[in-house]
Each structure stands twice: as structure tokens, then as C-alpha cells.
Image 1: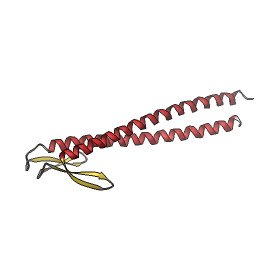
Image 2 (image 1 turned 135 degrees about the vertical axis):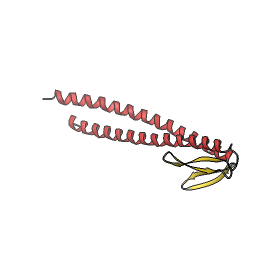
Image 3 (image 1 turned 45 degrees about the horizontal axis):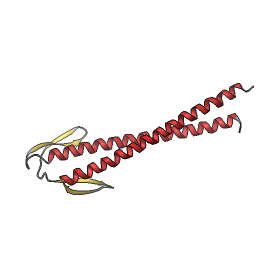
Length: 141
């Protein structure tokens, strides 16, 4: 294989590795956002399970906006299970489910970090190889 061909192959591999790294970074951002949402949900469920039934409170409607409302019941929560499926459970079960989900996402985040580190090493190695091939090309008459 000529130096030019080797350089093209290495450039292709480098671009592929960089694209894979970007994809993992996007996935990590999504996982981090989801973990943050779970933390907020757990805090909200725990906080709302304490007030008196019928007490007026602010209820978030998204986009940092709220409405006043009363809490008719504080011992049951509706949680999303995925695939647009929800279930009504008691507060303890909701917190337990959300905590377990956060644990799995945190493990996934660790796996993504490890894979990103591997890809980073690949990228570094490919860049070094590219520099060597470029030096060879420049040295050729």
C-alpha cells in the first residue's frame, strides 16, 4: 500500500472514530439529562408526599412555569415506565423505581465514559500514524 493510500485509510478511520465519539457524547448528554430529571422527580415525589391533602401548592407545567393547584392525594404517584406506558404506584414504590432507573443510567454513563476513553486513545493513535505517513510523504521526492 502506498503512503497516499495508507493516509486515506487512516483519515477514514479517524473520521469514523471522531463520529463515533460525537455519538457517544450525545448519548452521554441525554443520559445526564435523564438522571437530572430523575433526581428532580424523586425530590418532587418526596416533597409532595409530605403536605396535607388539599393544601395549595405550585405545580410545574414545564418551561420554568407553574400553576397553583391543590393536591387531592399524596400517597399515590403516576410514573412513566417507558414506551408511553404509565403506572399508578405508592410513593415508596415510585422512589424505589426511579432510584433503580437512575442506578442503571449511571452504570450506562460509566460504560459510555469508558468507551469514549477507548475511542480517544484510538483517535490519538490514528493521529500519530497520520503524522508519520505525512512525514514520509513529505520526505519522498
